[in-house]
Length: 512
Image (cartoon, rainbow, N blue to C red; front, side, top):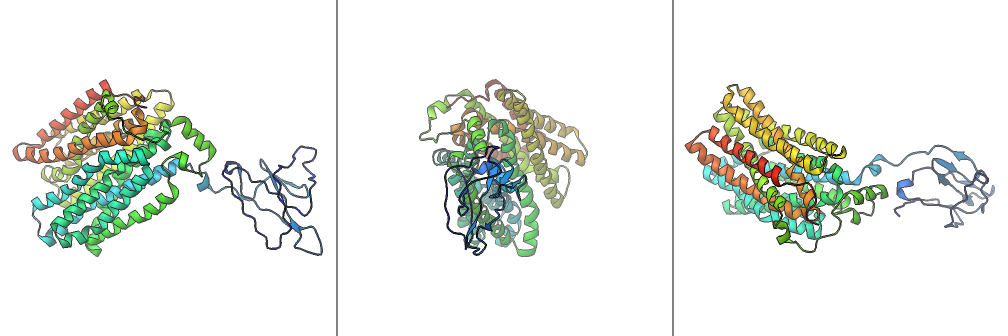
């Protein structure tokens, strides 16, 4: 039972307690017979308690120290020692104590992913003055930018195994503080030399690589299935808004305080987040002693992931067709996504003839579109589930939009001559792409809730490889071909992903 009480009176004596609840029948409700020098306190469970004032008066006219008080909470009635009933309480429980704990966890994960992309994209802005200061050529700049993925690839699967076995709280907390420290050390490493900078950037990738598997593990334990899509959509939209925030504030900080200020200021935010995380979060509802009974029951009845994992059944996981469908579709999805997000400023500059400043500002627009549509898609998906649609059908519908939407809008680019329409078309492409958060990105928890961290690590490894290969291949294609060729390959992979997903995916649990 979670209960709290605070009584203080320097002159209050003697004090007797009773563990017998008061009789509250109609016959004796108005008159309560007890020792006039006693104070009886009944502490109710937290979910039924309220905050109210206790009136104390003396039972001896000659000595104020012989005081007593007796209050009884009956629904919304307060009965004092003289039998006077009050129908209202002085104040109610603060709203933040009634706020669902599972959504506190979701919001903390959202803020972690906000910081994740803020720390990731700041280099894309700061690299310009850094390369001018240190005399880096384009090849060196590309090497620095890619060094992040060295560590990021290493910890996808390892982070999933770690999160599923020891709990997501420790792993996500480690990831945030690790990449925050690496962010702060970036200016120092750059001054020491290029090898040091490459190592620090790879270390930053190590920290961010465990974030997604750890988050997936935590939400599989905290969020009921009927809230899964919108919670994941909100968390992933933190990445999109983190990119917007990073791209918006980095130029301002660089202009006024120099490029090192970007890394120092962004990195220090991780320590603030860690303080909240350590005091407010737990890996699972079982470990949270402050959780209200009603919410604990709701989670227990609607979350499949309960017991901690002791070993990973690799053969079983890799023998399931839906697992391979998830991995393959993650590859198809990220190929197009990474190309657009990496090469979009270049496309705006080369094809639409925007200057570099306009290209940078317009690159923020798709991130905002993705943040909005991801949350809209999450609410739509959860609404469909709550109205009786099977989880399998909902996942297939949402991911089909996430594949066919971008494919359609990319095919329209070669028929558009207006720059404004081209920008709108790109934004619509990325907006429909974000429906994938309620499709394949939610599917890990559906098919293997206890191993969702490992499964996310597997599929996201394929996704990161697609980003690395697709980004490099795009440069090669543009050197020998055109943007139409780049978009044709992306559309082809979107169509392949659509077929595979609808044939082999499922929303049912296939691994217990």
